[in-house]
Image 1: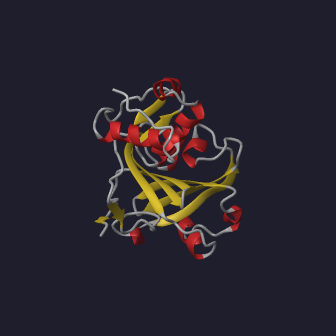
Image 2: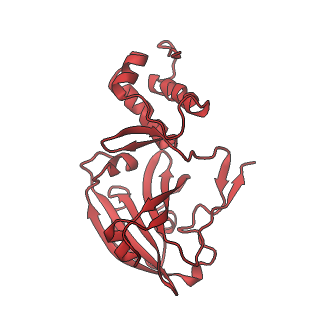
Image 3: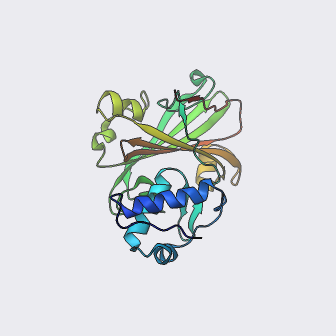
Amino acid sequence: MVELISREEHEKLYLQIFEILKRKIEGGEWKPGSKIPTEEQLCKMFNVSRVTVRNAVLELVRHGYLIRKQGKGTFVRKNLVLEGLTMSTFLKTLWVEDESILSKKVIAKTVVMPIDGLHEELEIPENKHVIYVKVLWESEQGPSILQESFVPFSICPQLLEEDIENQSIIDLFEKKYSIKITKVYTFFEVFYLNKELADLLQTAEGSPVVLMKQKVFSGDTVVLLTHFYKKKDSTKLFLLLRRQT
């Protein structure tokens, strides 16, 4: 049964559709990992424009309910964000039991175009430039974690001139550029390394690693997207959550 939207209410149509689709996910009608209807199908379902549907879907992506896969469609996330919980350490760049055992080396810092759907994750036009930073964290056993960070160029073009080895991007945002971080979505999944990443981590191509993705917001604007590729070694990632009071 399709819930109806009201065209007389003051609430925007895309927000009404957002709430309806969110209920389908939270209520279990749309199962984790399942593909949702296409934009065209949703347009017919609610009798609205493609722009309205797209805004509703993007809102669900931004809230962590859906994930868009290039050339495949849009799917319900298998690992939904927990509501009512906040990360007490969410402003730290990395979660390991003892960061002192790791050394940090910036191996790339440049400007790129947002390919492979990156513009959708950053919520920017696909013709806008992105600052790309690649960092390698090493322990006594060798490379342990590879970090890739993406920042919309318009957010902080000065980042290219900053010393990122001795301070985190988030610290720079907040302490130097007055970009206040308001929320961070964090997702974990298993990722199988391609040759380039495997060579950097000095392990075999196709090896499974823990991939931690962080999507960092200032208000409603995505200011940073970071991928941490953690291979199996003596260091341990952890995430501390506290319930809001």
